[in-house]
Length: 407
Image (tube, rainbow, N blue to C red; front, side, top):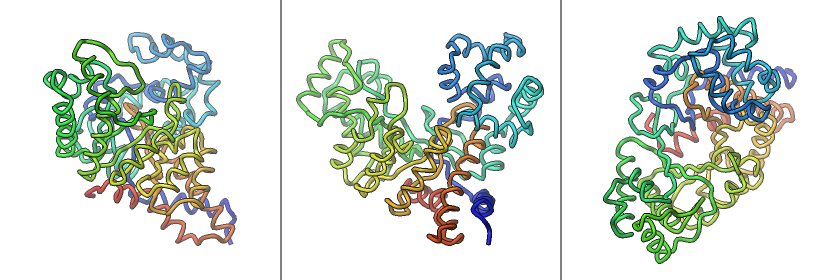
């Protein structure tokens, strides 16, 4: 009989053969990636910046890493001390895995950064999305939030972010000039038509933040809109107009069979992003489906209870595996005890321009899923076939069903 390690390796190998749905990215159209200068620092152009800043790197020094007018060796000299401080973090592990498994370099160090940069630059050519997402990762489509529904490829399926409404400029940028001068009813009609428009353009969801939204109050919303008409600016993170419009747009999304995606937890002053802020919206809109991102880290148990307590809530492990693999494993294991098998989504890379890092993150997700399921097999709680059926639901069936994807 295989030990736990052997079972884990067998599961990882089998899961790597799955075709999957990537449940959350910020990938722009490929043309945007091709326009950027690509070198070793492309692998550090997203979340590793948070670890580098926390290690003491200045914003200015980080910005300089992506300035090709500065010689590569000078940029590496600035970067290396902080890289040595962060290379054990989960954010960094994804970069290392990508360097090895997509570009063929066992490490990122003073001997490899030059040739690795040349390899990355040579690979930055048309077709890179397909080579990463389809060929290397076996991803059928990635749900992406990139500010447009015109992704240009079936590899990307749009989800549209619903930003805050605090000024006339905010309303105009989202809905046009006329919307910023009309009545509340006219603005609501415009907002609902906007949701219908993006659905017609292929969007499968809208995205909001788990801010402390107030109870929709029509009179307060009218007063807030009047302030915008006078050229004033409302305060945040929410305000009566925003509360009212978000409520209407969630209702519209539910009517159109779109998902309301929710960033919950870690980001900036994460005290404002407690996933429990969503309970009033979840209960007010039983017809809507809510996909709670990042398992609400650090409010993991609270978020698990959202999935436990409300039939219109799903939990998304996007980003989690590169926040902390230990947390992701613990959360997955506990989720099996708490939730129906159809309520979890296993993976979303959550990257923007460094598309190749999706493979590093996906490898970490496979490790975490295999670790959890191998323990269950070893303890006699499930068979290997049963474990693979569950993993397939998490990586494919559940996102296809939740987002009603036509794949």
